Length: 366
Ligand code: ADP
Ligand code: MG
Image 1 (cartoon, rainbow, N blue to C red):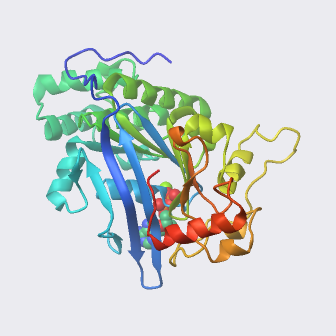
Image 2 (cartoon, protein in one colour; image 1 turned 60 degrees about the vertical axis):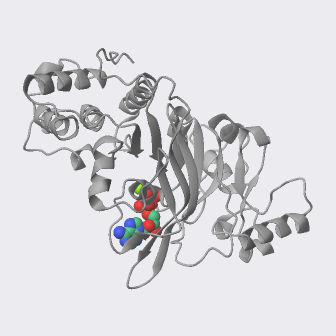
Image 3 (tube, rainbow, N blue to C red; image 1 turned 120 degrees about the vertical axis):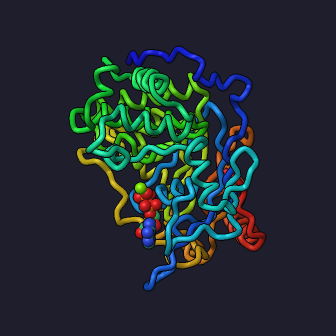
């Protein structure tokens, strides 16, 4: 695709910053205290996000992906709560203790989010141009002609042709793909370092989806953005992510660089997700799906939450919680939470290792 490159001084080259850890999430726990039950929507998740990198979070609906994103944006509302042992650091600064005003500053200039439905971010009664210019006024204090010029540049940067004219149009005059591009332009108006995309292409047809994914890749490279990309679609994750975290019922059950995950998936859940990609199970007529659905994580994880659906399940899966253990080359940092690993240990040794780690409260980072 041919989205024009951005010219101008506003472009953050990300030079020298590439690889710097921007976001460091450690033992994130987000719980919803409803009248009926306590839902551990995010249950001890850890990851780092570096400049110039895209990390993916993939898993079926209900696995806790959006709650993870909302937690990082400071957008968890009652009856939800980010538990006090959680840590979310942005450039070394703890965010979980932020006041609402401090969160607004973070959302205004450091971390921006793109949602599945562009209309949740766009107001139908204002022109696209006015909305981008409003974002520029709020977040970069740009007004008048300067704001208009910057808005044109942003639309060009996200591959919207005839930008000057399109600024004067309303969201309903844009196609679905163009609307999502406009939302990405609005997110960029904050000049963020971190962009969180929660199923941004799920509502789009595959051709448009591919174009948006390519756009995100270009923006990552040109601006040194760090992207957290959320989807239920393994095919999409393969396209965009550098590192992948597979999420199930509030936990990251496998984490690996994208090649490692696809070439050598270790967790039975990951293996199941891969079998359900169209074209991946040659010879079989129907697409394999994992039977059953993601359970609501409404009790403490003292067992494997995937066990009831797992083809490899054995007795211990019911009462030993699998901890994150290395499952491949140490240097590529491939980990999984499954009692089948580490593979080189006999069963008793493996179980003992997971039991001991549970005792240590030792979730290591992915
Ligand atoms: P995903 O984005 O992976 O589809 P979510 O992060 O939206 O999943 O949801 C994870 C879990 O958190 C689900 O069990 C869901 O029911 C629960 N949850 C999310 N938001 C709320 C809420 N506002 N109140 C109660 N439970 C919630
Ligand atoms: Mg979601």
